[in-house]
Image (spheres, rainbow, N blue to C red):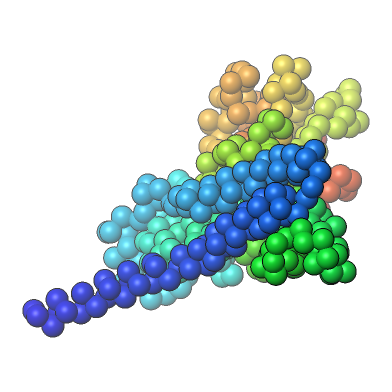
Length: 453
């Protein structure tokens, strides 16, 4: 018992030392900021610059930039990392069942069953549900386990030692602002101290005695040098994260593209367009874009995928008038639900059209992933579609076919019939070949779909 107690004490002491060591990079950055404040305000503005108006202007803008810089840095450091809710934890009974199974295919099926009610689209290389064996949870999309923090982090970008925190869903906006204001701070200090730096280099300060000693000259020289060197490194780092922001990609996803349930590996799977990508992190209110306050969209668990964006396009119907129909925007092929039969009545004739009020309810930013829709429920919903429902298309049905519906929440087109359910992820290309179901049992139908062949 005594040996066990000693081991625990050693472990706790080592953990405490590691926690202290993790703050060394942060303390280093803060020490540079404190020194640069003294060098700029006292040595440069007060002692080296004679013009009063120039002093006031330099100090005014310096303190504004410095305040935004420190504010962003503080928020990046002390904003708690987004962790996975306990509701995503797998019950102990299921964990025991999972650990007892040795066959990989059986484990895969069990994980699919456990995660059937969770909105997850990301998969492993083997096509299995992502599961963290350390946290015992189903991993939400874009989340990863951080070995430094010891837990799974929502939309993890990377663990940054300079902020002693994970850059993730909760503080990514603050981190980007921190990089931007740090770059602006360094450029401002370097540019406003350049004149005094050149004068010092020509030894004019020594002749005029403006700095009152070599220590003041050293501060001016070192201030410009440090600001210039940090600015060079920050330009590349800030530019890279602006690029990642505009393509809606994390650093981890840039190194290894996410794998989706439908479509496989796709590095642009979350790319919704530059403006939509920017607003997902910085929000819709432009007045708050430049302030380190949380305005990011979503909850960190669900993300809109590129394959969920849809739009309408009028097309010619040879059997009648021109109708408005959903055009698809994805790269995924039509797939068949393995849980349903492929039998279909050959006498089924279906044509679909949109109600005007339903067209106005078309939403371009779905939030949750696909959940199967029963044919009976789909038929009921198609008969009574209101603006509050997620269904966006009404259907003209024949007696032998239930419905054709489109679900705006998950971006899937579902052809729901008594004996058949076909699901297609919405593609991303504007012009796709239009095809018809050519099966012998379907030749009398007018069901038309889009597919990438």
